[in-house]
Image (tube, rainbow, N blue to C red; front, side):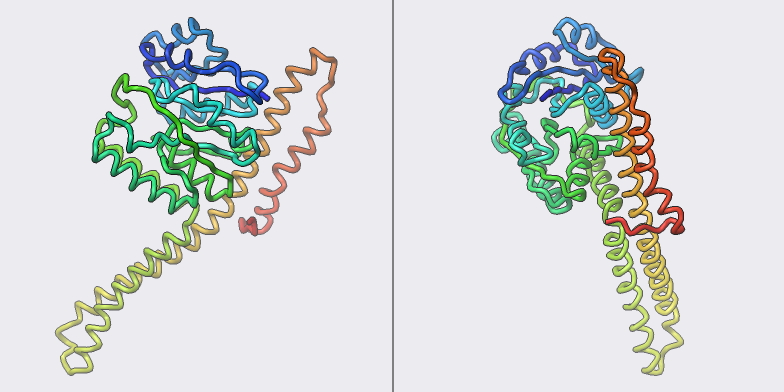
Length: 356
């Protein structure tokens, strides 16, 4: 059982050493603990500090790509290095590394695919009253949309099993935290939460300039991800609102028409007709988006299978020459056929799918 702790970093030369030093290298139930750094185009000595700290793996972006992309890069690298459990923590030493054993325990016990650390934000001294209230409201909203029971939805201290890491596909460019929970809930993954400790504040957040920007970007992510996984529900609601809004002026026109005064209220008829047309078009868009959603599920399944094939080939490439094992080409061919069969079947049905 291998655990890899990944740390996305951007100009963290001042805090990285403390973060790495706090990571326990011996954990009950785990054979080995390794540390992986994702350097997101840092312009300081982050990489040099990482090497001095004895970090096991370093992955570098040539330029700054953002936290979400760094997180995804880290997952892919951890899987290539054979991780059975992946823990993500921040390079600013916000989270207590000593709580990593507690964080991964539900995965070791087989009770969870993903575990999110609960910072218990009400007790964090440097969080303002407004930030605590927004944190509580936002997490409750994400719980409703994702179907998960995570008290601290934007906590970056989280653990994933190997299977969960293979199934998660981060597409946003802002932050992975909310998107991961919505994906996990819709993919019926087991998500747990454990209380964790936090360290004192060492620097300001670099993820957003101010609270309004953070709220706007988070709301954008929530809307996009929920519409991606529940398009029919979203567009049906919008369509119903437009249809009801269109019915009101039409009823008004009919009332005056039968009262003998319809000629002066044609504007109501026109407005109602436009709104009803817009509502009908929105419903049709919802149906089309729902069909696209089924194909997206097929694509995600194919990506997962391709990732498994790539990891299998990578392991055989590393182990084969050293142990005299030939590459099992027949197994690879069968795996490739299995991966592309759903897409071929969907194409044969004109792009429609009965995927669950």
